[in-house]
Length: 162
Image (cartoon, rainbow, N blue to C red; front, side, top):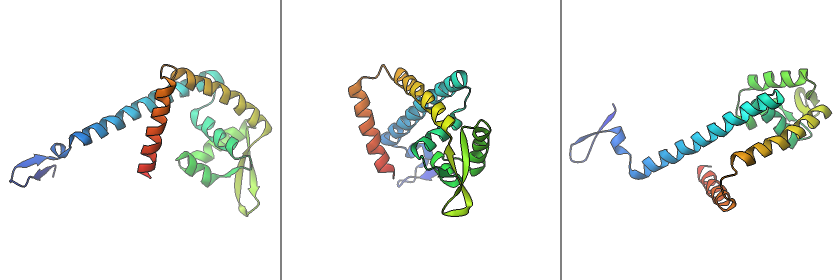
């Protein structure tokens, strides 16, 4: 099953079908993933140590900061790319800490939106400033020109993937 037959009858394994471009694409993907995981792990650690908060809780608060009128649970799930059950658990924790509140959705009385509380806005604003400083520090050795090129290239890649 992991072999193919070449036009001349020679049998090749699936790995031999990879061209140099495939190899380079795979290498690029793995390099991007490696960088993302390293940065994410460092940010997770710093959030936990400095603010006693998890990255998913920070991310949910960031989504709500961008949407002051609140977001429905399903929309939060879609934006954060996690299950509804995860969103419910994170929301429950943040609600217990009075950082978010569930409010009835005016368009659908069966549904709820989640909003940051006043305390949630204050806490997130404080964390966001420090978070941005951490990211700047982690990427400080990359020149502004290289950052600009990387942003442009990754934007181009994102368009091709859509």
